Image (tube, rainbow, N blue to C red; front, side):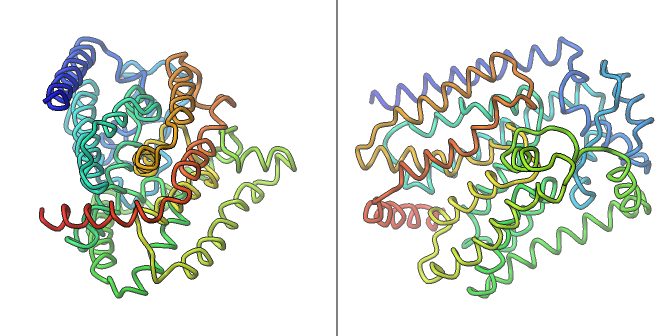
Length: 388
């Protein structure tokens, strides 16, 4: 009874916060002050068959929505999944921001619900910690893509057995930031080939072909425009708080190729890691570790992208709770990260350099020597998911 009342109270609290944020978004012209503006501008260009990477036009569009910076904010996402921004081309910036915010909340709620079921529907409310996960809060404040990447990962984990074609189709969202998932994608490809789960590949490539065909219909030169934009910008020379950029900076700041060595090493490691565990591979165990390694070794990533790590962080919370381990390490890490968010530190601040290795460290601490409990929980979770 107490748990039920607590959930109702939490739901009412989240609803109140959501309504308050919506009122704030509707009544203030702040779309131009968020990263969201780059996706809206790309949608505006695409819906009119224009170049979504045209800096001069993008800057004019963004300034019409309240953007005040000197240089345009252009999306660096490759064209494969840009069609997802098309609906934003039909509405104003502030209306688009409200719809974007609603889509983020819906994706977050659906992800947390699916994760709760994947972990065996435990009779506690620990999954609600996901709603106050610092990267999630930062993602909502900036209007970034991290929550949609989270939904993509969780949807795959939930449906890869039940609806493999659909699970593969939703994976296309990951191509908005493919550099975050390369080791994870290698493990997935090896698993697909080993288990002959070709419907996942069919779903991914079917959606990819449809999306590319639609974009080429709207803008037949989009791939050339993307290539030109990437050559013209200095995105790889900008300081980003990742271990890969730190590695390059410490050795030779001008040697861009050094930035990709950690991810290359992770790709080699994941082949060995999968091969030695292929007979007992579990996406909610080894797969989550690979997801964390992918984030730690990425050559390009922001704090908001870490919202996609909730499956691993939450799994660690459940495992630590079941084994009687202290949750204080998580509380400390999450608390410091939240303080950095509300201190309004720039996402390029060096103070965000520690977060991805911290989530990895938390997961390793929480999941060590917990195989027996994990197997019991997985059996219960599989029964729940298959009954849907």
